[in-house]
Length: 328
Image 1 (cartoon, helix red, strand yellow):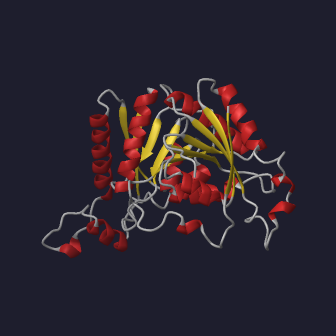
Image 2 (tube, helix red, strand yellow):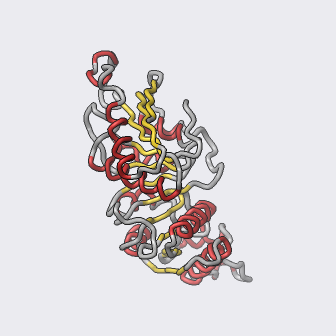
Image 3 (tube, helix red, strand yellow):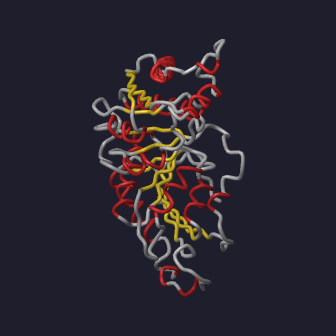
């Protein structure tokens, strides 16, 4: 695989959603002064039920291979003329390809919907898999993609005290500081069930008492403490950063989407506290990708995977991937 070290990689299939993601990625690459790769994955094998003779597909003709990636790269250059842009076309399984590239890329950018025909990857079907299993941050561009972190559009980060949310906090604080935006640290909680109490105590959120059966942790107080600790950490990372706390009871997905109104970016961790029913982020990534009014960044804690990052996306044997590259 050609190295994508330090690059922003955007998945592009020519659809409107992919075009929006491309525009967002180009703007972000120019802001970060990072090179950009426009990646088109020709994912034939997920679109048909049986064996395929690759040569039978029109898009594999020499005149067609690489066309969409080249068009996307030209579009990116027009939008961000100072960015080094290259095009890259692969044939293979879309999610698998993006997850492989995430081992070296600085950021993966993807839209929420794509073509359901043979012209390109079905972006909508792979966004969730890539966000869940990539090894670098993934931005899923949805909602009002013209919004970006700046003095008027804050960065919102959901925190629950887990290592995953702390990784998200670091990413969000760095992004806000670089963009001159404020940072909103959001913690959402809900009343604990009996199972939730046990989970909370297993994570050390409750102090043992002489009568453990009577211990009912105050979830609102826990949430306030978690938000305060996260805000303090963000301030230590960037002393000049404007950091605000937002602690609210309710549905995690719904409340995070509410607080992101007019935000430039929502950041969440890929995993949360599965045992603490009051504060769970790991289970909401799918929901905010569906519902957020702004782009969503999913951040993974370093070396969190305990199995092959490719395993979740491999269901059947695939033909060897091929690559077509162009840089101008």
